[in-house]
Image (cartoon, rainbow, N blue to C red; front, side, top):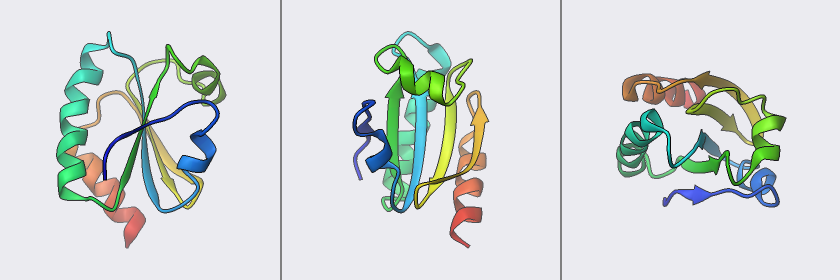
Length: 104
């Protein structure tokens, strides 16, 4: 599935169903750019996981709602509920492990 860019208006609908990984990021953030490559790999490997990106500069209310103090910041959702979140550039294997725990 393709990466979806969230807005404040569509965010809740985007995380309502299935396994969703939300990436709070900004285009000027170096670690966010590195993480973006890993998320692209994840899209190819696990197409049933929806990846939602939230640009904190474009959606400051969402960043505030989730108390995002630093980026990147990943939130793992399952059927509309936050399962966990991890600030910082989480290694690819840790992202996969967290998704696996959610599925099994």
